[in-house]
Image (cartoon, rainbow, N blue to C red; front, side, top):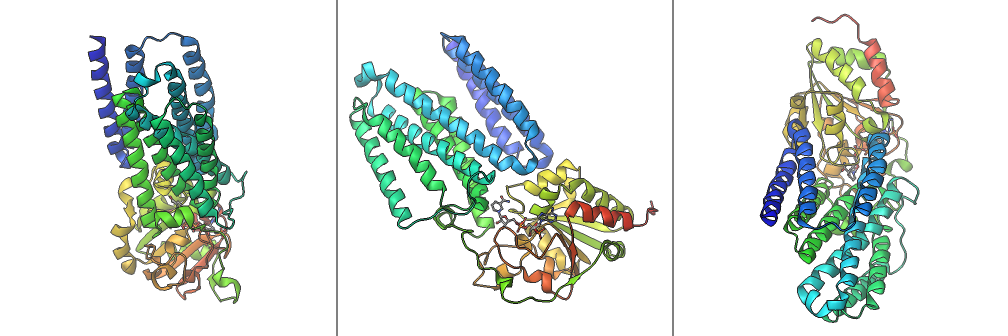
Length: 464
Ligand code: NAP
């Protein structure tokens, strides 16, 4: 009876996880998606307690309180710009949990290894522990790089890929031996140690700025580890949840790579961001700049404005000021839209989240492919803290590291205004020819401060 009930609970829980992913696809339903995921997880935990006789609640209760005491403040204290490292931290914890469960199962079942550790279970256990341990240290490295407690630049040395491959091959060989002879327990710590070291070596040659993509890949590994744990424990819900996690992480990393026109191999082994030759280094090219007063009068007399936000918006936390500017212009009859590049900022959906926080209507946010055709008819493209995602070199300069990356066609607007603090490059470390066009005005300053100045310059009286 209880066993049946547990299976029903697991089915509802799995359905909620799937709905959660579906609903999180759109800002309008994303809160419902988060809630569905939470209820699904609650049901999964309740079902698991029902399914097993818990011998000792002390550890479970202690873990519950420690996790809650750490998790709630982290959720509130960490700023939005630190979400990638927070995600890395939760992957590290999840992966470590999976790896430790796998380790415990391996040793607990040893007295009856012949019957309890058959080939199938051992394959699941070695996959679980290998992915779990390497994701644990890999995620810690990713977190350290994002938090800048570790060097952001790629750390490379001669024959690095060969060393990594050899290490992985030894770990894989030990895994095969353990599957064939599970009683060779002395091999397990060496195998686990190699997986931990491999996680570090895999991540250190990758530049800090590529970490968001790496985190999506590590998310996928952690999910696959949990999926393998489901097979080892014979728990169907873990198999489903792990597979959903693993595949969604993989799909996300593929989307990110496509939007940057980079391959998986280039992200993982390309040491992107190591030494970027700065195109603007050799010559000083002329550009035009303007103050808030001129910017305000241009915006005021425009019929249509498309705002292209980027990473600088997140740094400046300018979303609420942008909302004020949006309201003022819309009330004056200016048609204001937002152009969202899939990899603007430093994590997927970064701009959507920030703009939603300031209650900017979703129907004013347009994906790159939907809005690019509108730039030629648009009076003003207002770029706020974006750089690479507007760089026309991606279209024409074959030598550019971002060549082939799809960009927002802001340079096709009648006038372009760019708010940023200096002529410094962005993530890719390269100059942006957009800034030297005759139609471009550079508006130097912090995004929040500059937008506030523009708002002050716009006459207070509004027509409606
Ligand atoms: P970006 O190319 O990094 O440029 C951001 C610009 O913001 C900088 O040039 C900086 O110029 C300016 N800025 C910084 N702080 C500012 C402030 N307080 N006020 C005003 N401006 C400020 O950013 P992006 O155009 O959004 O492009 C994103 C890049 O990240 C792409 O190359 C993408 O491939 C990469 N990436 C994205 C993701 C993702 O998931 N979104 C993941 C991995 C990599 P100043 O210093 O002169 O102010």
